[in-house]
Length: 130
Image 1: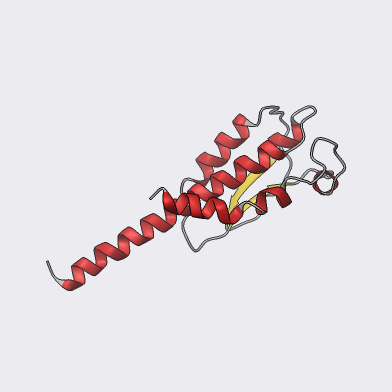
Image 2: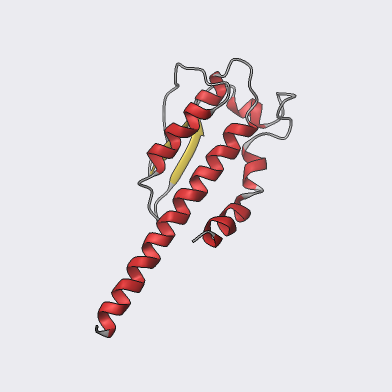
């Protein structure tokens, strides 16, 4: 083995680890956002969408009260995420902003703001699992 090939292996492992952290953190963020979302019919939870390097558009005509189908879909889509890219989790329903800012008694502090307060913990936890 040469120094160069040893360094290549270290670099490759670091890339894989970084990608793994990105995927895990994306999943943890999505899970928190969906679980913190208020639920009435399940339409709001079903409209959380994932986008890799582009913001999701459109509205989904579905319901998902427990949020499990939506989370599984996001997990499947985020499995190819790589470090250095931009991942989006968005909800395009017209009332999403109102719900984020206290319109629902079920989520008076929103979903995104609560989730983002946990962001550093998700990163630390994902890195520690490697």
